[in-house]
Picture 1 (cartoon, rainbow, N blue to C red):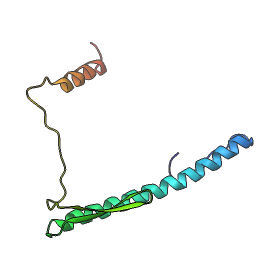
Picture 2 (picture 1 turned 90 degrees about the vertical axis):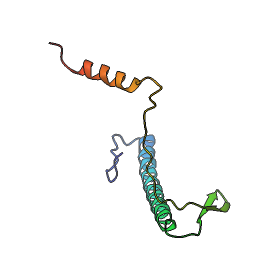
Picture 3 (picture 1 turned 120 degrees about the vertical axis):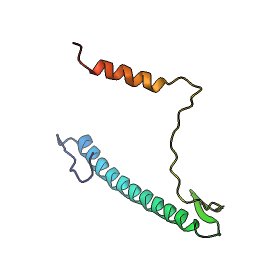
Picture 4 (picture 1 turned 45 degrees about the vertical axis):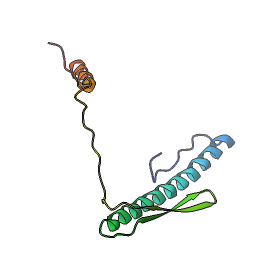
Length: 109
């Protein structure tokens, strides 16, 4: 269900109404969780960026149900974005797949 859309209720049966209420409640919980994760990712990116110019390690407060632990990460390299590189010693299977897909999509003359 898209965010902000009303749930359609077709029949007034008890099970249908219950499912509609559950869907609305789940949508609220999912929205809250999504907001929480985005906030935590923003804070982590800020901490990584700040650690690039600082000598102190990054301190993470890790939660596992009722147990909290402080972890220190000694990293000062800033954000990194990995990318994939093809191994020349292995066969190029992706090109074969793409070539077969484009051959099927093009009309035969």
